Picture 1: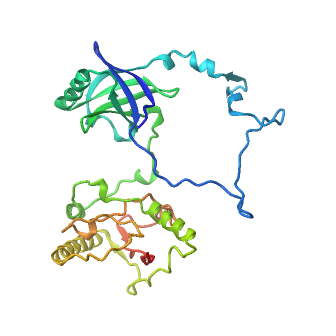
Picture 2 (picture 1 turned 90 degrees about the vertical axis):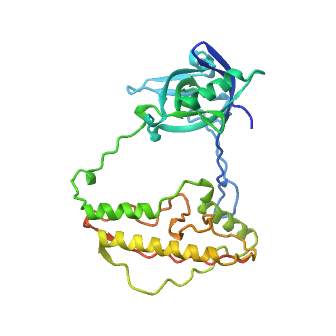
Picture 3 (picture 1 turned 30 degrees about the vertical axis):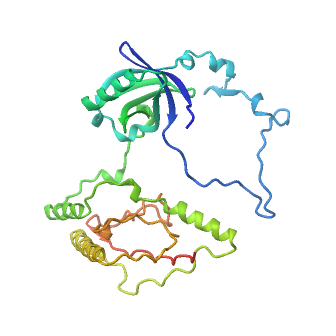
Length: 332
């Protein structure tokens, strides 16, 4: 990794030289645009609307237009003169319980590495945060913006997680939630039973990006001149989707979860199939004895044509639908 920022971490009179590294990276597949007619690559040019000349990026300044139409132009030198850009210190302002920070505020994460030969002050702060079970609230300037952040420990490494400012978080106001809804004790009890049947520890490595893996499969198939996704298997013939009351739907969900758990336990007793298979669809790495109902694809959401449930539906009813037909795997 390459550091993106160097400075110091200050708490009280203690000053710790540090380097800052991005803790995350994007794994999305990169595309470029081409002309649909002939495949020629699309290029964008920066053109001045006054003189019509193409402009190099080095010749571009930034401008702000006020509400009354006045324009202020700022150069790189103007930004460099701002005091915040010359401040290379991450200052601790307080230590707070982690549960007091709303997760919606978390933005981006950075690792901090000690930049001096002596790591004692760094380790002292790391162990102090662990022993007190608190996070430090810090603020610093990074990439032309003052950041509010939480400093915590992850695997014995100090991590800064930038926080959104309060005015950057939208309030949730939904008229559909204004009307009171009566939840029956039996419904609440059955819902709790369903939650209990799905209870598990969080193992992020079990989840994969189905969309990205299918996209890779599509690209590989196109390169090989093959079909990526053969026709889907015929859907299960049976009853159409039926509308049932909420309590009955919860009861059937619990029973289905129990059947899945029993099937998983039975499968766990059988010899494993050692035939190598190429995984063309993303799936959760299941553990022995884990209920099939617990498995998840962990994918990004994809629109299927409708965004919202019907606003005219009865709040006490739920529609059960069958799972979509699964595609056959592409032969490797």
